[in-house]
Amino acid sequence: MRLLILGGTGDAAELAARVVTIQGLEAITSLAGRTRQPSVPLGDFRVGGFGGVAGLASYLRVKQIDLLIDATHPFASQISFNAADAATEVGVPRLMLIRPPWEKGNGDRWIEVDSVAAAAASLHNQAQRVFLTVGRQELAAFAHLEEIWFLMRMIDSPTDDALVPAGKILCDRGPFTLNNERQILIHHKIDTIVSKNSGGNATKPKIIAARELGIKVVMVNRPAIPPGEQVNDVDGAVAWLFEKLHN
Image (cartoon, rainbow, N blue to C red; front, side, top):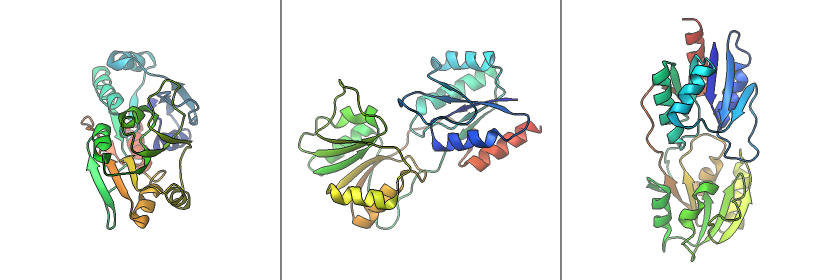
């Protein structure tokens, strides 16, 4: 059987590594290509978009894909909806691998918002030094906040023509340690973090460090996802695959 993994996350990479050892299953991981030097998964992979629902449906047919696992980032909602429509059109069983979101705990100072634009609006007259961790494609939403200094962390630096807020750019890729995050917040005198609720362990230490230091977190809630079968970890996805293989 042939499996298409829609990837770009640590969970997708772990799943690809596990799938390599499963007899009777051939997998291809698809990466969106948004980072210039993506982490290459084990096994076959491709890079780039499909061209919407029609393009993905055509790919499923041409490559004779039998199973589809959507293990994309929780905020990559468009590809998830496209995958749902394409899989339904072609008749391919689809599973969503969605890691659980972080949950607010004792000591957390969260302000929960539903969009990056709302996160930017919440900072006006409420923050002076912000740790911005929403990715390089979202920087323009904060560029008008000239009274705020931003430490902006992302995998790749923004393009030369990008609209970027005032501050410092830090290019780095997780997973991050608690000690690393704590030192960043202290050294740069951060009073507010802006983060998407991505979930998982790779970037969670900044949330723990903020709790320890009493730093406010503006947390962007996840967008809606399409209906369908889902699991919250790689073990669950592997179990689903074995079930499909032996039916």
